[in-house]
Length: 273
Image (cartoon, rainbow, N blue to C red; front, side, top):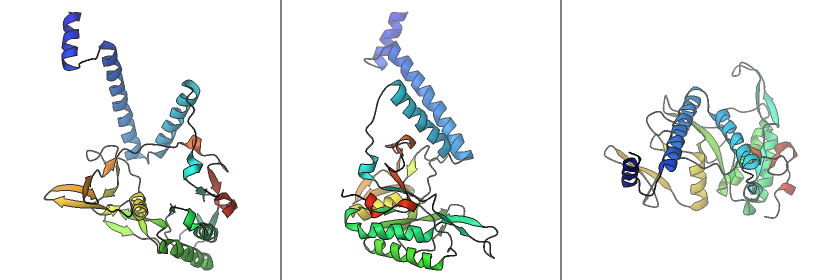
């Protein structure tokens, strides 16, 4: 009986054995369970806390169990600036029912002016802050618009827009600069299952796509052939959805080594490279 089973197994899966079959089956079950848990998290919550925990456990297993130490090259490729501790208050008025905490526009403008002065050494600036309304500091807002305009003229910056899926309306920020959506909804039930869309709803491009287009000079376009959608770059077919790889994890974020607080940022941290 065992010999018959082995022959059948080798006929359909040449080179395999019972051990690899069991391991593959267990891996498949694990991926199904993991995917279902992720789908629940994304559709009921935002999914980020869950994925952050997954990355933490992955790091724990790699570094402390398997003793695999990856070299952290984050600071060699990216300059990360944390604005979450540099805030100001948008006070209560007729348009705001409560005091709101927003990014300090004046401090952000100062930071962008520093980056603009080193624009030749910086490939691109992504500002992942949605500017929904003006601040109480009109001078700070004017300075921020000037900084964004300078970088935008050099094709060096992009800021977020928000697309409302229910109404199909695009909400633009109060500042003028190149924009793209910054919406990380990673799963659509029965449509694209755990994949990230570069372009969605036929024409809405994500910030990363717009940034890549400005850096590379290429363009990604959406097309239709009857009911079928397809996408091209430079006239060649390309994929629109992907499962992005996680090059870096929360463990790679070390203050004053791989990222800096905006309140203490100066051109000293840009470095020569």
